[in-house]
Each structure stands twice: as structure tokens, then as C-alpha cells.
Image (tube, rainbow, N blue to C red; front, side, top):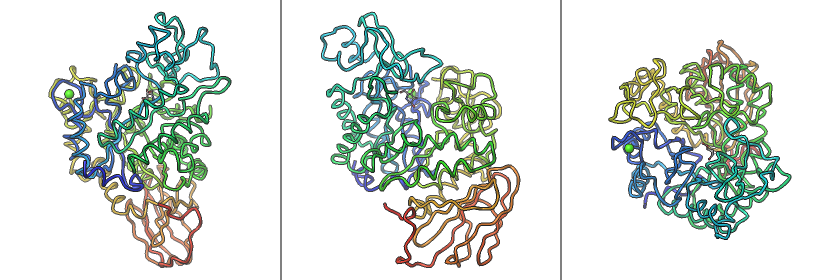
Amino acid sequence: MVAGSSLRSGAWFRTAVFYEIPVRSFYDSNGDGIGDLPGVTEKLGYLSELGVGAVWLLPFYRSAWRDEGYDITDHYAIDPSLGTIDDLDRLVQEAHARGIRVLGDLVTNHISIDHPWFQEARRDRSSPRRSWFLWSDTGKEFSRTRVIFRDVEPTNWTWDDLAGQYYFHRFYATQPDLNYDEPAVRQEMFRVARFWLGHGLDGFRCDAVPYLFKREGTRCQSLPEVHVFFKELRAVLDAEFPGAVLVAEANQSIPETVQYFGDSREFPMVMHFPLMPNLYLALAEEDPRRLRHVLQATLPAPPGCGWAYFLRNHDEVTLEQVSDDEREMFLWVYGKYPRTVLNGGVRRRLAPMLDGDDTTIVLMTALLLSLPGAAFLYYGDEIGMGDRLDLPDRDGVRTPMQWTSAANAGFSTLPPERLIRPPVDDPVYGPAARNVADERGRPDSLLERIRQLIALWSAHVDEFRSEAFLAAEPQVPSVFAFWRDQPATRILCLYNISRASVSGTVRLDPELKSTPTVLAGEATLARSDSQLSFDLAGRRFAWIRFARPFAPSMGLPASSVDRL
Ligand code: NOJ
Ligand code: CA
């Protein structure tokens, strides 16, 4: 793990593109129809070619698999269907050798109903495990707590005959919540984190963080106790595994979400849930104003921290934080097909949501990359693969990765009907049309365009890694424009989110005397002393760099200072 430790210095996550992998859906190395850890190891070459700097693996622990591994039955074991602990060690070692970090998923809020901890607790009121869970004789407590899987679960309390009481669950009834007022539970989770970091992981995406503590009369989310717990966990990690990163999954309002940075003492990274639905809404409206508002309300992240941006993940696009009108518009544009809506959100992949338009996918990916923080890509979105609305729950966005044009997508040696999930089978987004083998090396393919984009971003990562973000006024309503500043350069990012070609101008500071260079994208430019004129075709973008006269004493605006 030598390479591992050297990778763990500083805020490395500001210079990495993250790639999310549901292990069971990625690559099946031993022909049993289930993607596995050695399968991920085999595909590291692909990830490294794509320019990925870190992978986030969905839970690989022993599980009852009723919620894609988020229902753990043994926190200290790899699920046998995915491999062994040696397989994980090898994966980490080989990833590190390629400069790729590996994040696990830390599932603290709940466990599987089949976990021995719950089995002991439910059978015996005097068991020391009883206090590890939340019990009730009436099931009426915490009535202000919203139900998250509202299409499936009517309530957060379920009666258990064996226990003779109700138990509390924020998610499925098969996932009893742990009781974080029990000190032994908190200690156990520290042990779990230490155990996997000890196996060389570089950190965790932390599942469902707002919900750990419950207090009567509250909505039981983002309570002060939650922040205390994660600050403690962070302190343990900083002391014992310096550089390990924690990424918060906190799907909350803006003020609640920003609190998870905890003034640089809690999560180094927080998923930008407030921005995500607005990216799609802005595109539908061809108006970027809402993006400017959200970013101005959430930037800069505190020192040493950064936002984690994403377009899609393994869940539905959640619309919990948008207004009723916005939800209606979102579903009108992106949720038109039957069976699209789940728990009020949209269970679709990126490509079908964007009508299979590669240019728009590139535009949105470029936008994520150029914001201060880090971009998280979801496996398969880089090739434009689709989804299956006929599969239950969120399985439709977790279908086998499309490696080749074969009917089984080259995911396994087995025929399609024997795989963990059937591959996408439609002619537009299925393996015949969208797959790694055919897209690799073909200059106009989505994969190649995304790969080049990441390569360009990586080549200029020192210019993109600061928190500096200044909105610009391009005089065209459909163009989202901002500056990313460094002492030696300024990069102007322009995104035409409408389908129409546009022309506009951006005012230039008198200090910018240099000739601009287009780093990525396509724009026609003309500059005068005081302004830059540009033409951008529909859904096109450009990253335009100006050298600035190097004058360290000049002083940048407070929000522009690189504090890493
Ligand atoms: C959030 C995860 O992203 C989701 O997939 C899971 O179902 C819930 N947490 C419960 O663990
Ligand atoms: Ca397998």
C-alpha cells in the first residue's frame, strides 16, 4: 500500500474526476452473471484511459441485496458474490499504482433486517443489542419525519412480532435504523471506517448522513448531533488516515447542505444536491439564472473543502428540494414516459433524459468539470448508455455496463437472460448502438469527446482547482458565463444552454491584454480592448484562457483566493 499512502496528501480530490461504480453492474470476471471486484480491477485500464482519478464503489459488504448493498449483514466482510478481501486489496493496490484512488460507501444510518445485530435485538429485550435500534409500543413517535421511499413504505415504523414492538426505519422496512444515542453504535461505526481505511481505501461516500439522530418534535434530519458525530469521525480519520476523504450524501435545502462542511471540520466534500435538478431545469428553460443563484449561494466552499457535482447517480433524480412548479416542469420535460416517476423523482439515465444528444451531454459534463470542486460521473454515462423502465425500483439505471455490442453487452460470458440484470435492449441506447469497444478511438463518439474533455481539464487542473468563481454577464440570456481566476491566468467559461446559435460579448478588465486561447469547446472569438465578442452554436461551450500580467501584490477579490 506504499503508493496508497503517498496518494493521500492534501486536498487531492480537487484534482480528480470521480467515477461511480455499482460493482455488480460493471464487469463480471468469473462468469457467474454478477459484476465483481476483480471485474473492476480488470477494467482499471479503461478508467485510467478515460482520465478517472478516483472511483466510488457502491457497498461491497456482505448484504441481503434488497437495496443494492445498502442493507448490510456483515460490515467486516466482502459479499462472496463480489469477491474476497484479497480481491479488494488487489483492486486498491492496482488502482493506486495507476494513480486512481478508491472510495467505499459508508452506510451508517441503518443495517439489514437480517444482520445478526438486529436478529439479537428483536429476539430479546434484555439483549445488549436492543438499545442499538429504535423501538416503540405505538409507532407514533417522530411523526414529523418524512418518508423517503414514499411509493413503497407508508410509514417509518414497522411492527415486529418477534420484538413485540415497532422499529424505526428511514428507508425500507428491511433496513432498521441504528440508534446513535447508543455510544456503542457510534464506536462500532468508527471501527468499520478504520477497518476499510486500513485496507487502503482513500475515503468514503457517506450514505444518508442527515438522518442518524432522531428528536421528538423535529423533522429528524440535520440535527446538531449529526454534525457532532461526523466531526468526531473526521477527527479520527485526520489523525489516523490523513488525506482520507469523506463525501456527504445530504439531499437537503441549501442552508442545511452547506452545514455539512462544518467550517472545514466535517466533510471535505459535499454532494451538490441543490444544484443538480437546477442543471436540468436551466437547460429546459434555456435560462441559466437559477444556476447563478444556486452557485452564488453555495460558493465558495470553506478552505480545504469542495463541492461534489453530479448529473446522475444510481438513484432516481430526486426532486425533493424543488418547488411544486419546478417539479411539474421537470416531469413535463424529463418524465414523460410511463413508469418514469419514482418517489416523486425521475428514474432515468443521463442520455435518455437528454434525448440522446451527445453535444448536450458534453456541454453538461464540461460545465461540471469547470466549476470549483470535483465532478462525479456515473458509469456508462460517458458512452451514452440507456436505462430500462421495465425493471423495478432503481434497477433500470443499474443495468450491465455496455462493453461491446454483444447482446450481453460484453459484461459477462453468460447470455443476457442469466445476468444479474438484463442489459438495455433498445436500439438507440442499448449495446448495439452504445458500447465502449465501438466508441473507443472513434473521434466523434461520445466516449472520445468526454475523454478528450477530461484530458483537457486535467492538463489545466491547476487553473481549475481554486474556489475562484465570478459570474460574468455575456449579454445573451441563454449563455451561462463565469470566470475561473488564478494569479497567472483567467479562464472564461461560456455555455450556450439553448438550441439556437447566439452571439454575445463579455466585458474584459483592462488588465487582460493577452490574446485569448480556446482550451476546449468551439467558439468564434473577436476581441477589442474592452470586450470579447463570441459566437456559439446551439448547446456549445468554450473554455477561453487569458494570461494575466503576473503581479502577486495586485490582490484578488476575497472569493478568488486559492486557499488550497
Ligand atoms: C441512499 C442511497 O443512495 C440509496 O441508493 C439507498 O437506497 C438509500 N440511501 C438507503 O441506503
Ligand atoms: Ca462475477
